[in-house]
Image (cartoon, rainbow, N blue to C red; front, side, top):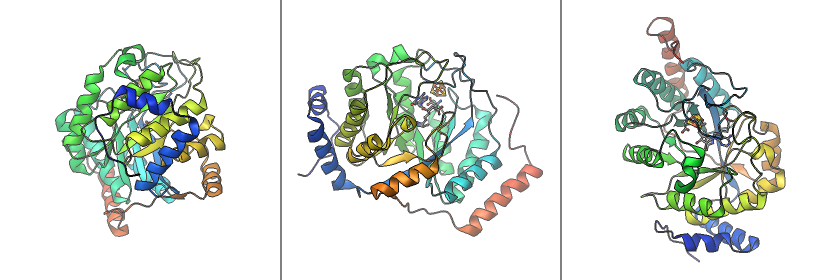
Length: 349
Ligand code: SAM
Ligand code: DTB
Ligand code: SF4
């Protein structure tokens, strides 16, 4: 059975995937997975919140929105040096991609020089770089790409039809526009969604069709399970059935065979068996490290134990940077700049 890369998925076809008996769906997803990937490898990314809280957007799931009263404390943009230090720790723990997230509607012009330094510094460590900063202009996408940003994460999160029930401060089309700028700037797209927002199966189908019918499949597709945070409007949302979550992973794998599908937020609420079934369904990427952006993720040691039990290895990456002398040189430059030149952080929130 060979499998074509398609961009013309129709609702009924995806519904028939969701309607398959569980074992048939998993068998199909695993068979497709094996055509493109080593089934015993996962890609490992580490997240860091470089600008936390006080976000003007009203995403009903998010603990960082200024609209809700959660325990997240607002912080300023992190210093460049500290970001690079955290990336180095993640690299030394075996992570190959460093994802930097900011609770912004969009980055401001004054933020850009710091963001570009972060990208260069993390890249010089030999890691792949990813950022998620909200809406981008075409120029910002070009600047980030020129600095060496490998991936831009920008989730569609749910269906177009359900979007306004979850977020009222931006439109679905704004999201799609940023994805287009990211693609045009030559960066890899990371885009997925959250399951467990109270959406219907039709919403899940609609989201997956949006992602799979983009001009190119996102290279990375994070499938998050809602992390319910006290103070957010979705704090008491009904749990998504774990088999239904696994089905979402499997259908994403079938529709986007060459993409890395990330078993993303929500692993803290899953047992080992559920996670193993997600890998069987074709997930081949995880966030590694005991914190996501603001909420807990499994400890590194328990993830290592699980991967060992399953015989799964970390996927290696071929990087162009990472030469030790170059890394140290860049790191030194950043420290020197901090001591003499323009400040590497500022006081605005
Ligand atoms: N502010 C930027 C944006 O929204 O694009 C970047 C950061 S935002 C925290 C990145 C993603 O985190 C969101 O698109 C959403 O998918 C995910 N996320 C936020 N809160 C979550 C939660 N409670 N559970 C699961 N995923 C969540
Ligand atoms: C994604 O799809 N999930 C990550 C990452 N991309 C940026 C974020 C998950 C956030 C979970 C809630 C929190 O820790 O604040
Ligand atoms: Fe802001 Fe992103 Fe959270 Fe929405 S998901 S409130 S845009 S940080």
